[in-house]
Length: 220
Image (cartoon, rainbow, N blue to C red; front, side, top):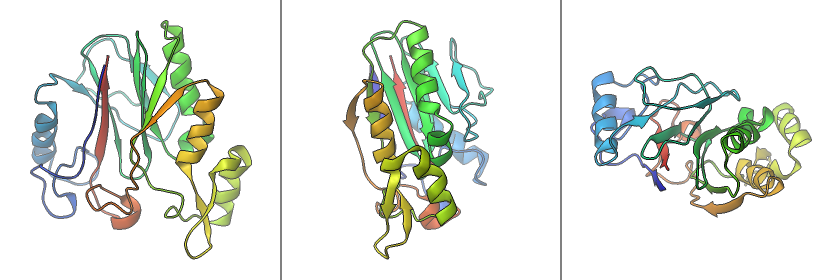
C-alpha cells in the first residue's frame, strides 16, 4: 500500500492555479493540468481521478479509465491501481486494508450524506476487515466560518463538528466530526493534518476563491 498527498508546488500552472493544480474543472489550462497530472503520475503508472459532486456515490474501480467516474469515493481491490481525491479545503480521506483501498471526498455535504460509511461498506463488501484511515490536509475548525443555518444542519447530525472562529462566529470542525465517524466504525486513524486555509503551500478555496486542487492518492 502506498499513499501520497500533493501540495501546490512543483507544477506548471500559472497565476491563481500556480503551480501543481490537478483539477480540470476550475478554469486552468487543460494542457497544464494534464502536464501536472503527468508529473504526479511519474513512477505511479496510471492515477484514477473522479468527477466529484459532493454526493455519496461510491465507484468500484476494476481498471483505469480516462472517463472520470462521477463519484465522491473510489474503491479498488486491484494492486497498483492508484486512486485520487482532489480537494481545496474538504478532507482527502484515504482508507486502506489488506484487500482494498479507497479515496474519499469528505466535505460538509459528505458528512451529511455519510459518504465515509458508504465507502467503508463497499470495502467490506469486497472482503476488507481491518481498515485504517489517513485524514489528509483540510480546513480547520478555526477557519471554516459558516452561517448559523449551515452550522445547525451539520452539528445536528455531527455534534463534534461544532466550532468557533477567532472572532467567535459559527464554524465547523470537519476533521473532528470525521474522526467520530471513523471511531464509530472501528477504523484506526493516522493523521496527516495541516490546515489548507493557513498553509500557503496548499490550495484553499475559502482563502483564495479561484484556485487549484491538490490530491490525496492511494494504492493497494
